[in-house]
Image (cartoon, rainbow, N blue to C red; front, side):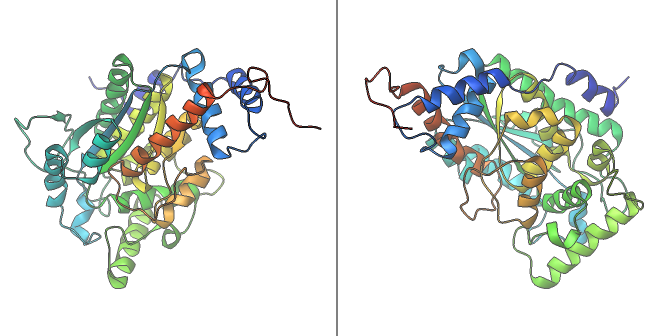
Length: 362
């Protein structure tokens, strides 16, 4: 008998606690004592302090990094909401594995273990080497006409993320990047953003992979109609249950990322989220368990308009702003060297006392 999504989540996050406030304060004190004007390293000091609050006594250990790219298809692509056909999802999965995708290059460049996860691609990958096979079903249903997933399917996809987070913990990973691939998934993320933040669909919906103005307007109409179908009575004071939002308007890869984010936080692992889609999963996870915020780093700010809205909803400031809108975990992996640099400064710089340098006059 399968476990329901709410019961699965409640069991898996029962021991989830925020990062240590005591270690955060200790880190701030240490940073203020380094041989530099107080605060002169800017955001790097915030990043270092947050990492110390997560890693606690393990803060001096080198970071072991991995990126998980979750792939799935979306039934809503039948409505013409993407500039690319749905078969591109499967084609890109093969491109990831052959090393030709941006994330493949960046992961290799920055010594990040790369894992490609099939959680719902509408293709047969039997026997494909290097792929993590966790397919729940071959794509979601068309969210315009029916819920994207059943409750059982949401639970299965969440469990994929929880399971992989536990494996990452056993493998000694200390910093995870979360990415995705799925034609049509910006429509799902836009619906999630509108429902969680109570913002107009037009405000959170971008052109995705490059829609014309006419197609962009059509995409907004599809999302608005889907929201009206599944959530006809929304209330700003009481937004819909996040797991209901995920079931009706989400995607299999978004559900799996949600599970991995919750699971990684539970295991005390730092998480670099990527762009709009990855952040929609983080927003669902945050709505379920606000304590996860202290484990999250926003790798970058996407060009998708809904991304900044979701970052504000969670309370995150992006590390990078490069005008990117690729996905795949690319922005999250690019931010990893900056996180490592912050920790190198924290661990390697001398203090005023150890270097016998005079402190500033008050």
